[in-house]
Length: 109
Image (cartoon, rainbow, N blue to C red):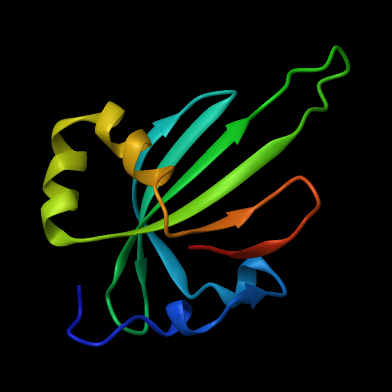
């Protein structure tokens, strides 16, 4: 992590995912109901975990989904490299940016 806070941490809410200046470093898991990526802020280098989860599987294929963006430290990056289970624990721990079923994209502290 950079010595300065990531500029994303200064905003409370985001109009769209395009405001998140994040690029994919690598895919950690890619399944039909659960996906996870390691991301990096292109402006400062701060790493984030992005986790996607489909919460309900309706018969027509539509269901609620949530997307989490959690900033991680270099130490946590090493933990993620060793355990996908630990990555999921981290992505659900606050603070995180949450895109919820109402379409809001904001920090949960």
